[in-house]
Length: 174
Image (tube, rainbow, N blue to C red; front, side, top):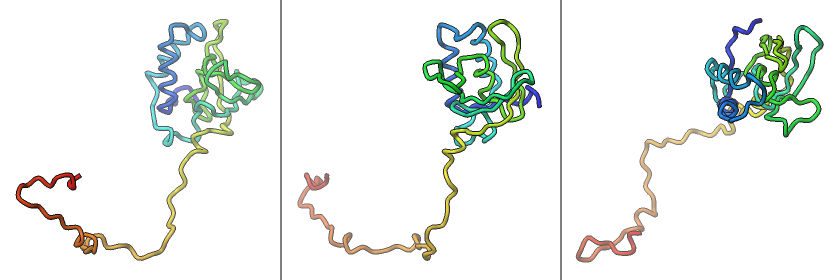
């Protein structure tokens, strides 16, 4: 597969990238340009509508760099959350991977100026796929209620108010 596949972002990931683009300091040289290109070309969808094959924030992604060994990392927001096995969004690889799909090859500009080709092998975990709402199911086989037929209530007959004189109902109107 190639880089020509569309980049798909959830609305949350889109706004997160916008926030990165608006920061006064770049996370790495050239980051703002990468973010702006990604924002300009991305297809934005609601989190519930994202495909299970798309890398989103907090996804666990399996990838290879320049046809090398396969690595697996969780894509996280920033270096504050960084632990072993994570990949911050604020790194060249993190920015390249967000919005990519399984089977897609994306490029990342390394800090030394060289380009890396990153192939997305698999997506063992994607938070949006695990939060998807279950399909509706029938919980009762009761007869449907006919809401078109008017019903008379005993309570409506009991509630009659009486006015005397003017049209001001007084405090009982509240």
